[in-house]
Length: 359
Image 1 (tube, one colour):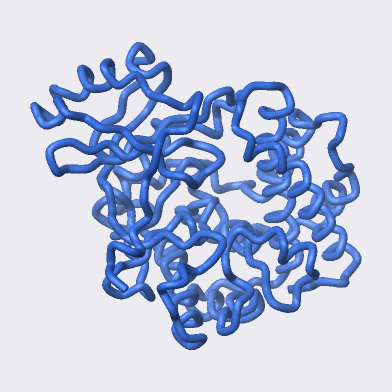
Image 2 (tube, rainbow, N blue to C red):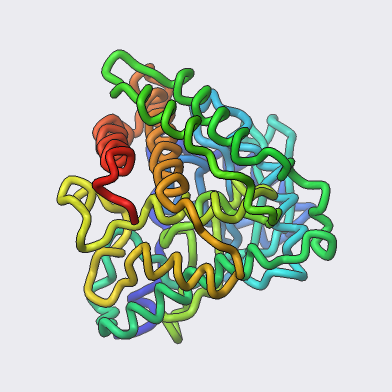
C-alpha cells in the first residue's frame, strides 16, 4: 500500500455543476498570480449540500466552495459565514483549512464562493478503504481520536478566537428545535412521512441549557474530517463549516451521534449508515458519551433528547435535499433516494420516543 492509494481524489465535474472557468481564472489572477493561467477544475464526489471543487495549476492546489445549484435555503449556504469562522479559528484550532479568498461578485460564477487551502489526506466515507487494514484496536483508537478533536473545538476560547459575539447561544436549544420544525414544514412533499409525534416530543422534552457556549461544527462526521496518510489514526483536518456557530456543545454531540450506527442497532438503520461506525472495535454511543463527559466536564443527562433531535435534524436536511429534486431544482440523481432516508430516521426517532432505544 502506498500513501497515494488513500488520498481522497477529485474527479470529473458533475453535469449541471460546472463553473465558468474563464471568469474564474480572470477573477483569481490578481489573487493567485500567473499560476492560474493553466487552471484545471475537478470536483470532490462527496457532499449533498455546498459543493467542493479542487483547483490546480502549476503544481499547486486549492479548494473552492460554493452553494448547491437550485437551493432555496440561503441561510444554510452562507459562504461568508463559513469563511469568517475559518478565519477566526486559524490561530486557535489547528484542524481548519486556511481561508484564502472570499468572493461575493455573482458575475464570476453566479454565487458567493470562497477559496481555501487543500489538505491532502484520507477521507473515510461509508466503508473503510480495503487497503487500510486497521485492527479493531486501531479503529477504536482512531474513532476516539475523532471525537477528541470535536471536544477540542468545544474547548476553543471564544474571546481569543474573536467569536464571543458570533451566534446567539442563549436559548439555543429551543431555537434549534423550533427552527428545524419550521424547516421541516417548508420542505414537505406529498410523499413525506409524518413527523408530528417527533416534533411534539422534542418540544415537550427539551432539557435546560448546558450552561456552556462553544464553537460548534453542527455537521461533524467522518467524511467531514481528513485523517493523516502517514498515521491514519490521527485527524489532520476538519471540513464543511457551513452550519457552524456558537451554541450548546451537547447539541453538537447529539448531531454527530445521529450519524453513529452501532452493531446493536436495527438492521434498517445500519443499512442506511453513511460511515463505518458499526464495525468491530468501534465504540458505542454510550462509550462515546462517557468519554465526552470525561474530556469536557459536561454532564450528558438527557441523551435520548439530543440523539432524537440529531436524527430529526438529519431527516429535515434529507427532506430539504429531496425537495429540491422533487421540484426539479436539481438533476442530481443521488437526491432521489433521500425520501427513504427520511423515513428511516423517523423510525429511529419513534424507537427513542417509545423507550426501545436509549443510547
